[in-house]
Amino acid sequence: MSIRVECHSGHRGAKEPLAFWLGERRLAVHAVTDRWYAPEQRWFRVHADDGSMYVLRHDEASGTWEIAAYRRDA
Image (tube, rainbow, N blue to C red):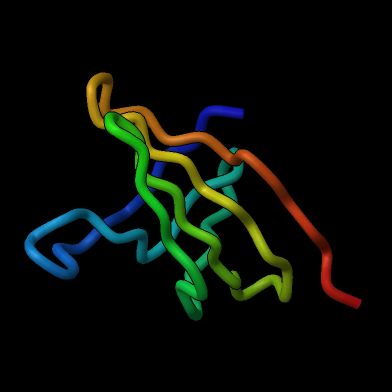
């Protein structure tokens, strides 16, 4: 699922997610709990203000963001 992401410059100037939109709904990122890298992709495990965990994938070549995984916390 393609999404729109609001970012800030994190460690070494790399983009880090601050918030993302699901349709018209804006979800703030409360914490980035993990991050990992591939040659042309960056992945972030984040906890959002809806209480759920998301894995966001950023394709650096195209600039697109996607939700790669989702877990609703009980």
